Length: 118
Image (tube, rainbow, N blue to C red; front, side, top):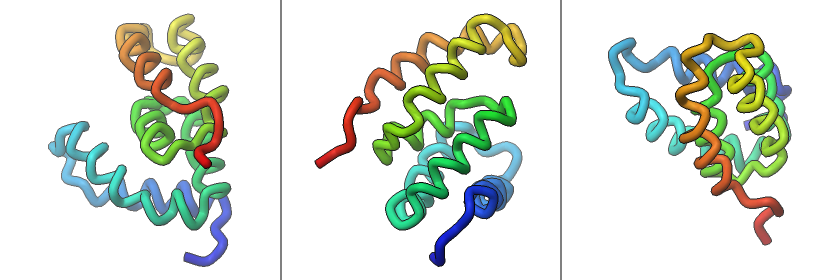
């Protein structure tokens, strides 16, 4: 990959997600995306992190960016993800039923390291 912008990386993510049939189970999409994003997370880390930030600012469900951040140890997203979970708990810009999924998402966020891996 050549140096991507955050918008290009987000478009890449959207295009990759669009390839999945509508009935694909969320866990299958997540498992595939974890594998598919390995190269971009390594080679285009800054653009990938910024793309996931854009994703979060669009008020989309944060479970996929959270799983990608944990898998690829994108500690740069810890504060962004925490802010989103707080907003979800308050119902700020998210449907009320999202509050139910905050505890498991918060538990997954706890597994994200606080420091970059050596």
